[in-house]
Length: 304
Image (tube, rainbow, N blue to C red; front, side, top):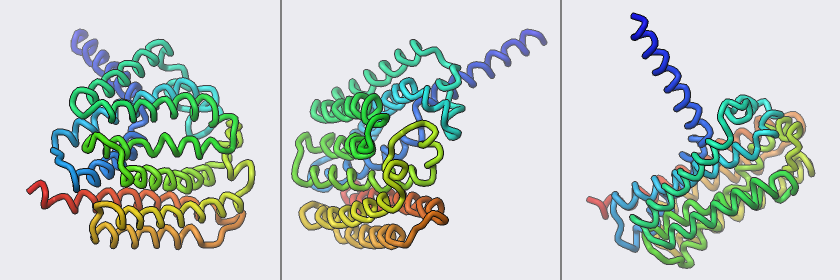
């Protein structure tokens, strides 16, 4: 009986450690980024040969690299995570995971992801994902996030890399269509991120992170968000006019862009900005999932 209890205790401890190490990879962020990887892959597969094997390989490779970046982010941000109600229970902020082990973990994830992309996709996809990784870890996490109101803009560039990786994994070259896709996701990141900053302003204030709504006020952030949403809609139309996206894409993107524009352009003040920003955030998720989904649905005839 003692032996069985001992084994059960080991099993519980092991499951707890697994859960802890999984949590510092930020699975929610990985999932969100893989949706955009799929969008890039689906768009490229309309004009270039692709396979389901390549699709899942690309998702796995990019997912591992993003996981590595998130672990490094958790390591570097553990001091400010302790100051924010939303993040103070993260494993590294609480000191539950050894820093040296976390660094090795991040390195192993990075090496695994890049090796997968290099061997089973192509070298260009590997180079692009590594550039995004460096930009996220060094320029955003270690520099601009803490020191500049433009940190969100810098972060949006690394956030737009996953769909570009999905695209070049298929094509092995960067086209005008790929640049438009990259630009579209850069623009999408801005109102999406500002919305998060708005409904979590107190956390950002306490951590001393100089995001635009905190430093310049919600009205200035609102003006910027409206401009970015309009620009996003314009570029998404350009992707239809210049790329391989079909009429299904045009119809879906028009509907969700209209919804996003409508909610973003609604009036805000000091009393309703939290509920307003949550609405903008939710619609932004609908936008990226709908666009990615319709690009995939347009591909169904090619895989049947």
